Length: 502
Image (cartoon, rainbow, N blue to C red; front, side, top):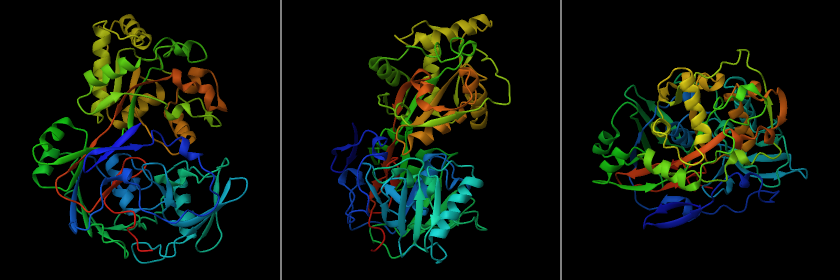
């Protein structure tokens, strides 16, 4: 069970996973009367007083071209203030109105009808319609190459939209809160596609400053100006010296520095580091995944020890259930890559170089292998890596950080020996996530000796993915804010749920 904290500090329970919520519930009509978000989703409680202008430091870069597919937590936070999905999902998994004010479902649960808000407008003042939603989704498919969690959409009227899903949904499909389904207009000369959210871009400076201004006639419980400071290449401690209102980080040095001058509160556990070892024990030699990880599931105590000894930030042993275990009814399509299968080199455990925690875990696994101090279960994976390295004349395993594109290329074509990979802990659509993961593992069809569509359960992902540790970050508050609430994926938002006057 996950917990959030709020002032005064005391525990608030959260749902451990949103996977179940995708199919839970039986409502087939519009939402109940809107009510304030539950206390568990308020990281900071609503207050009647707060600054009209706030500053937020971002640890990663922000690219407006990723508006419908954010690649990091900083992009997710900025875009969540600018763009809306038909519905949104709070930190407890409740489906609430977003761009749509009401909805209903056909008896088969596959076709749903949505009515957009009457007061939905783009930043330039033009009305947002169901036609805009359909076109936005089409652009996401054709331009961005994003797989959408819907089969089709049909415009019924200016405010009416019919959405058909691949499979029935007894309750409101939470997958519609996916950022890929946000309404974003065609890109303007500024480089930013217009949205309908509670804020709009008014300045995108060369110094890494993104200035947002409040839109509409919403609640006063939100700042009128939000200034996001992109500090990807600077020391975040300098941002604290400049008295920012909010900073989200997992960097222990920053958090230690923040203790001297600021308050900080933990966010939910949102990332799981897993070990993928496609060539660990001769996998390509025969169909099936036997030998990749086999029965080498690390015990809970071993995962806890790995989290404690390897990661300098907040970490704990990864605990299930995991969303890749919830794949009943999902289907994937395996295709052999045009490039021939490349045998693993046998000398490295690699990770994305920007992922500090993944690097720490990879280094720890290498140290355990080098000293033969393998914890129970780990030998199933690490020992074959050691043998392969020794057979190739390599003195010892190495941990290596790779640039993003090089890491994805290696992961796709199995050019290394093993990977420490970060996966989200919460997902709205497990089937979509499974298909996206399988596409990243381009070698899988060759390794399995199978090509074409098959049930996801037959992939036996539990034998390919070894969960290691779970990670979370903290929100550091330099100064008082109106409120901060948490979305389903742990994104902090700086406006109250009633930001728009109804």
